[in-house]
Length: 474
Image (cartoon, rainbow, N blue to C red):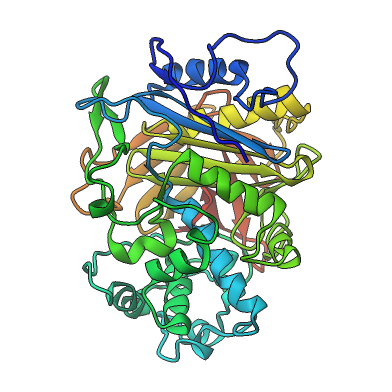
C-alpha cells in the first residue's frame, strides 16, 4: 500500500501529491503514480469553499493502493497546513472499531451476538426491567435497543470511567420498542465497550490498541489530548454571526471512547480501509464480511449491518459510517465490490455536507453510481404527521405554515457540557413529502436530509426519525 503526501499552495493551501490540475479523460480516483486524481482534489476545494470548512484531509483506497492529501488549515487562530497525517477526531467512526473488536471475540467463541447483555454484565440495568433482561449484543450493534441514545455525562478520566457510565444507564427510558426499529444510539456502544473491558481485563483503550490498532499498523492513533499536544492535529470550528469560530470543548469525556473517541489521520484510515476491504490477520474474511450484511430489524434505507450503515440505492452496496465530534464532521465509506474506500475528515460545522457531496461526486465520476433523486409525492396524509416529537436533546415540531409543511428544531439540552458556541434553534425548515411516510428536510438545499415517520404496531405514527434518531411523539 502506498500512502502519499506532498505540498502545494492555493487559496486553501494544499498538501497533496499532485499539481492540482484536472486530467482530461482520467477515470480512476488514483493516478498510476499513486496520487489522488487532481479532479477529486479540485472538487474538494470547491466544496469546502462553499461550506466554509477551514481544513480537509482526504484518503482514497482503490484496488490495493492508497493515497492521502490535505488542504486548508487545522485552526483559524493558529493555522497549520492540513495533510494526510493531520489528526482529527473521527468520532462515531470509532463504533466500527468497537464492532470489530466485538466480532473478534465472537470468532474466538467468547461471545455470541445473541447473548443477553446480562450474560456478560450481570448488573446491567436500564429503566425498563424487561429490556434490561432481554437486550442482546446484536441489539446494541444494530442500534435497535431502543433506549435514549444521546446520553452524555462526564464520569472522570480514571480507568473506571466506562463502568461508571454504564451503571448510570439505569435511568435511560425506552424511546422505541426493543428490537423493532433502529434509532442511532451512542449509549449502546458504552455497553459494548464495557463488555470488551470485562472480557479482556483491561481498559477499553488498551483493548483496542492491542487487538486492532497496533496489528493494523495504525501507530499514532490515540484517544487522549495528552497524546497529541506535540503533534499536528485539527480543532473543530462553528459558524456564529457570519464568522468562523473555534468550537469548544475539544475533548469528549473518556467514557465516550467506545462510541466516538478515536483520534486518527486520513493515512491511518487508509490502513483501516485495507483491512476492511482486503482482510488482515486480526479477523477472518467470513466474519469481516458478515458485518457488511443487513443485521437490523428494518429494511428502509439505509439499512444497518453490524456497526455499519448499508445503502444499496445506487445498485451497489455502499458501506459507511460518519462521525461528528464538536465541529469535526467526517465520513468513511467503502464500495466493497470495487475495492474502493474514501475518507473525508473536516474541521468545519458544515463538513458533513462537504463529505457527503464528495462521496456522491466520487461514486458518480469514477463508478457511474448515483442514487435516484427522491421525487415529491403529494399523496401522503401529511396532517397525520403534524405534531411535536422529542429526543432527550432536541424538540422537533412538524407543522403547517400556510400551505407549506415545515419543521422547527429546538435544542432542549447541549450534548456536551460547556458547549461553545451552543446549538441554536432552527425554525421553518421546508419539508417535502416523498412517499407514504418519507420526507426530505430542506429539499434542494446543500443541507438536505431524509426524514421518516415511524409507526407503532397498531399503524399509528409515533416517531419522527431525522438525523437517524427517532424522536417520540408528545
